[in-house]
Amino acid sequence: MTSLSISVTDETLSQLAAVCVNRVVGHGKLPSGTWDVWERTQNVQDDNNISLTRIFQAKGAATWLALHLVQFSAGVKRDTSDNRKLEYQRTLSTLKHLPIESQKRVAQRVAETIPESVKGTCVQKLRASKKPRAAKKSRAAKKSRAANAGSNATDAMPQHEEIQQPTRDEPPAPTAGSSSSNPQSNDASAQPPIPFEPVPIEPSALNVTQENVFVDADLTVASSFFSDELYNVIGRNLEGNGRDGTTVYHAAMRMAMSPGRCEMALEIIPDAVPSLAEKWFGAEVKIDLKTGRRYMTTNSGRLKVSGPRIILCGCRHAICETAFKKDMQRAVMFDPSYWDSLCQGRRETDGITMEFSDDAQERATIHVSLELLFGTDVANRLFPQYRYEQIIPS
Image 1 (cartoon, helix red, strand yellow):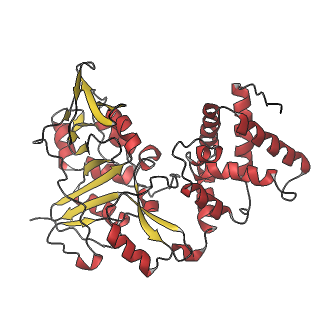
Image 2 (cartoon, rainbow, N blue to C red):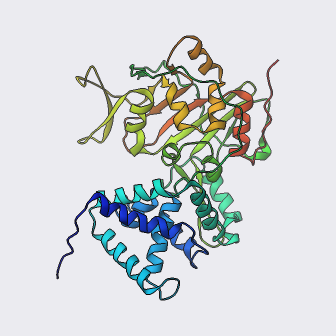
Image 3 (tube, rainbow, N blue to C red):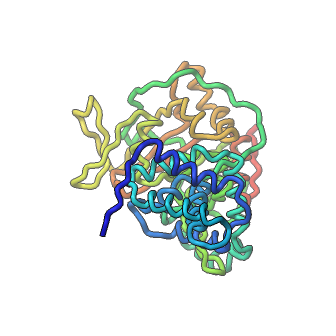
């Protein structure tokens, strides 16, 4: 059998990306069964994430749809001319024989080239193609949610697409620059700003005079508060199955609400812990390949620090502008802990911390302190089932 030899040049990758982008831009009605294909993509057990479809899916719904439409047009007799069909077939054949890193570069170019307006249209059409009954929750699913709240589930889920939000007042600008100081600590006395456990309550048990912990954040709404990079590494918790057998997930988030207190916790998938620790806190978190345990390095790598519970404090101000979208930025930047750091001339805030264990298979938790009123608005949009009203202490 003759093997296919492909010259991987920058021009070749650009041409492949252009075919995919042109196919998705201005597309009409989605092919029948598109939602089912999308859903199957999410449920494929592919931990290495190396298949062509999964590589494109990891860049978002619009990028995946571009590949799906090319695949569809390459395999049908209608919908496209013979010449276009041959072009799509050649494109797919070339993509499949590219090295994995080159496939990822093509997917990245497709994601960067598709206009934001088209991305929004793709997401809307994809959601509209889902059967209406899939959104309904069965009684059994609700019981399953109550029994399994707080449990970790599959992190492979649909990726984020940009959702436009109404313009709000601008939050205060942080001090310029960032530092790479060593704010990390494994001292048990260094408590995070959110010392609460994920003990959920039923909406009917809501009591505004005491602390309440909300769970089961709306996955779609969550995408409007966080950047693509952060949204895609937030864990997903399995809620149950819909009546038609579709799997239902929630964002692995919780919020503690009480008079005078509003705090959020985000569960981060294990693979993203080292990257976020370095970007957010300037901490080097590594994994011992022999033991599978996490550890931190200090003193230029000559000292290893490990323990069952590690807390990183002092999140860089610049992260607030890149990781959070406007409404979330406002809730973070108006919080007293953030203001105090500004007044002290610091470039980090203690209102955001990161907590993780030395087990490299466990999720980490990012704790975020929010201003009361703005934080309550965030909570009510993420957890509409509770309809919380903040009581401002006199």
